Structures are given as C-alpha cells and as structure tokens.
Image (cartoon, rainbow, N blue to C red; front, side, top):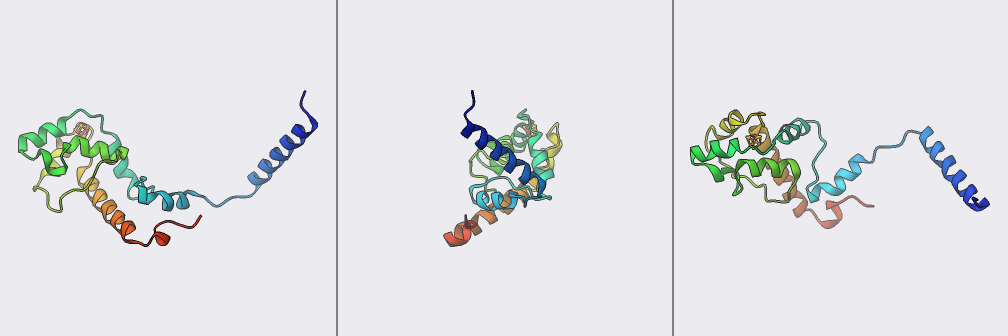
Length: 150
Ligand code: SF4
C-alpha cells in the first residue's frame, strides 16, 4: 500500500503540473537552438525548413551520382558525391559539408532534374554555405559569446 509520504509527493507533483499548465510558458526552442547551433543542429528557421524537407525526400537511389559521373563532375559537391552530400545535409552525418565557391555551371540544376523526387540542390548548396559561414562565426566568437548562459 502507498505510504502517506508517497501520496503527498504524488499529489504535490500533480498539483504543480496542473498549475504549470494554466500559465503559458515561453518556448525553450530558441534557447535550445542557440545552444546547439554551434554543434551543427538543424535550424527551424522558416526559410530553411522547406529546403531540409526537400533534402529529406532523398531515398538514396543514386541517380544524381550517375548524372554527376556522366558529366565528369562526381566530386564537385565533395568526395562522397551528390548523394552523400544530400544525405549529409539532411541527416547531419558529421561529414564536412563544405562546398567549393565555384561549381560547374548547370550542375545543380542537372542533378535536380535527374532526381526522381526533385531534391532542390541549388537552395541546398546555399543553405550549406550559410551554415558554414555561421560555423565560422561561432568559431571566431569568444567562448562566452558562442553559447548562451545557462
Ligand atoms: S537522385 Fe535524388 S533521391 Fe536519388 S540519391 Fe540523388 S538526391 Fe537522393
């Protein structure tokens, strides 16, 4: 049988939970993002979400790799090829997602056209460049500014 102390503790927790539910609380998402962005957590910023959704449609068929091989540009998006690039962006696989400043003309559009689920390579590369610039900012910032106070 439940002891009196357990009963009181349970009642108190229940009361606190109900009380908290009555008052709207500030979302902790911005703080979470500020904390983990330097570690590469995906952003929930409105312009980035559709791009990430597009990347997540990838089902690793390899058609973009074939298209890049046919153009002789397999390594343009990194040593793992276009498919590895897309999977890395959408899953944060911990690989270096840096892309060259200059890419062969028409490559990204050709990859999207070769892709059966139309992964948007152009905005994806833009997103990776933004993320890299952001990471460089975090790296340059003094430790006290890189992460929010706890
Ligand atoms: S063609 Fe599209 S679905 Fe297939 S691996 Fe490349 S990005 Fe993924």
